[in-house]
Picture 1: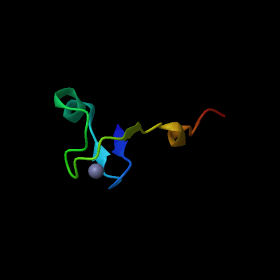
Picture 2: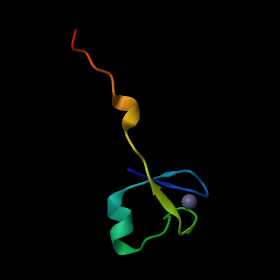
Picture 3: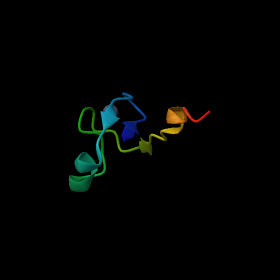
Length: 44
Ligand SMILES: [Zn+2]
């Protein structure tokens, strides 16, 4: 998942294939969302 730096909406990789810009506001700086929050380890 990616995120627009301007409107902070989620941008999919599919949207960036056509053109690297936000499909909502047209902003051209997209950052990658790092799923580091999902580091819940259930092992115990
Ligand atoms: Zn945007």
